[in-house]
Image (cartoon, rainbow over all chains, first blue to last red; front, top):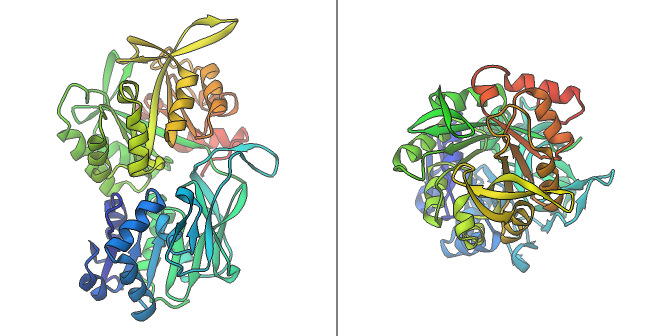
Length: 216
Length: 257
């Protein structure tokens, strides 16, 4: 597999890490772009994101990346991997920045972790949720191949995804609340953690993605 | 199970080479930063921090190039600090491949930089570095103040109040270095570590003074640190990252093994 991977660039931060990691796992040609023609030609699409959701959504809409993503996902049925804020942008709404409407490709919302946040024993938890936490796999998926259940991945976020359709939840992470760490539906896989920063486990997931045909 | 406490090897870099100063004065060369970052990545380090200790005085091009080379082959979070003075400096480092940027002196001269940077790039990538030194006791409690210029120049700013202010302005993390301990191998200054971890909601990285693995344990269990940073114990092969993690795990600390 491999072929061409388009990493959708809507100008919110550095995408070299994602691109480097994809190249490292043999993705073939990695194109960091918001050019509709390039994305249409790609075999698969990565939808990353860092920073605040309001600015991300504004740029996504201004550069028409919402239409590009929808088209790749729904019309062209390309395998799509959404990462971090890219995942959050797929939901209906986020609590961040006093409330921001998102893409509504997935039913559900993005909520603040809460402050103060505590674990089940009452210990205070810091926000942002920053560091390596255990990812509990909730269903089998080709992107989990070679990755043991409860493997740790690198997270950094203050808001978490709560999808309405619990059938979509491919993994959960415990941090005071049970947050959705991965969502999967048809040719879409979305992760809250950063596979490009998650050492061997993350590279394995990216390798699985570049070899994935979009079927579950 | 919960979030793992992080172990972060720190590369103090001068002119493109890793060094480790003793109290930032007596400096030894420990090698190529890209090679060393790769080695820590392979050992299972949770992040790598890269501090350009001469950046305030010299050109940035070497640093930017080194960051680019590290980011191409190291797939764990990379923090870059040293001489970061403006939003443009931050953008340059993030574009070179840094995941987080550490701001120190510039935050003291211009605290609004932290707010601007957090709003522009997100709190997750803005680390505020605090160099604290004990300056005596107030009402029987030790007082710690911020120092600049490698611990030589006092600012009169209370370290705990400063940490709280930085968190309020949007810092995503605090990198706390005890200037009394840095380079001494006598362990973290646990008093200031505990005071700051208790004072802020954001994660705190303890730094300065690690000489053995018990110091790492103390930083977490007594200091309450979310992450521990060390340089020389790793650079000179006294301990490996897996040894440090196994030692911490045996003392009940959750780590990524």
